[in-house]
Length: 273
Image 1 (cartoon, one colour):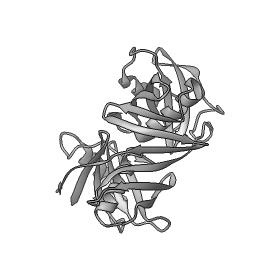
Image 2: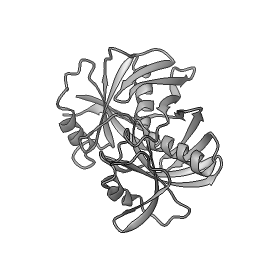
Image 3: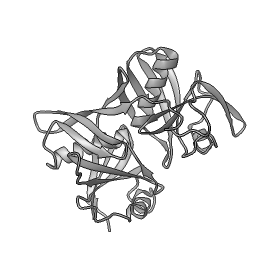
């Protein structure tokens, strides 16, 4: 089986071309094997590139633990670069079918036909507790929750997948605390967890614990969620730089819509047996 390994600001993925969905039903098993960092290639997730009946291409994402994800911001930037540079879709605007609906990608392509960065429509802002979903709660905005004996001020938002944002004013936290918040009873399907520090009104810092993958170098949906929450609660600007352990993304809020801008890189290609 041929693969390409890519990353978006350090969030890494194994890409497999499966246009006719011949691997349907085997995704979880394959992801667990290939994503293992000792006995496989190693990655945060598996991305299957498939044909779509309603868009240019379809992106299916499986986390490293074998669970499915509806959407991933870093993966979809890599996806845009992959399908363009492999001549699957030769357009600078690409529609991608995901578990969170169709996403529109605008590719910045240089004179050598290399994709330099990708602007992604991430969806509409939603704090609706029934969509996140929350247990018996209409919304969770800047409220205290106590998890594993520690108190957090939490805000939850849906950006394709559920995210809970914890605003911090100092470094008195460990991203590994996210493993307990992820499973907190309030979150019916679990949650991704973002620890966020506001640097100033144009810059924020984010560390993410991803549901199904653990601590990652970057999370595109998490950066989007964090920018929205900072704009709402800390009056940051509608366009901010988001610094993550793996680099920097730009998140822009336009009316009720979220856009993400960032790069994608190919790490290696090969054959796995």
